[in-house]
Amino acid sequence: HDGASLKRKLSPGALLVVEVRANESCTSMRFSRRQEFGTVLLLLCLFASLAKAAVFVQPVDVKNKQCIWKKYAIPDGAHINLANPCMSLTCDSRLKYLRGASCGRVSLQGYPKNCTLKKGKGIYPKCCKTHLVCS
Image (cartoon, rainbow, N blue to C red):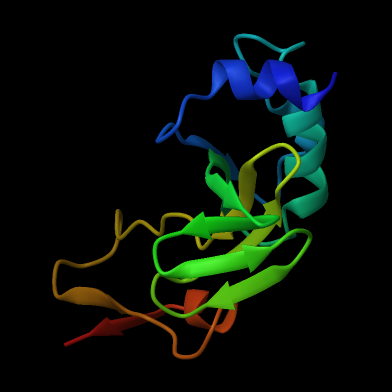
């Protein structure tokens, strides 16, 4: 598929999020419109790391072959890692979307109520390294 079908399905401001876990393969991820998301699925599988992560695709405005997102102008094909929010972004100006990865969710379920999560420091992926702190 080309990016045209992807652009028609994902309106500006829409966000496609898929959680990937280390014990699941990319082939086990399913979408309700599997054929339309074939290209996205391939990109997500390539982009997902072995650790638990949330990967996403988001339509963006493009000016001078740069993806415009918040205060950032990301050149086509360029890859940036951020600390806040803790994520990695890659621009595809031809298809007018960002591919991204963030830390995913960490649950405190099953831990004592006096425990909290301390965020990691640095830019992505270092900021994903959360630590359990119990008082």
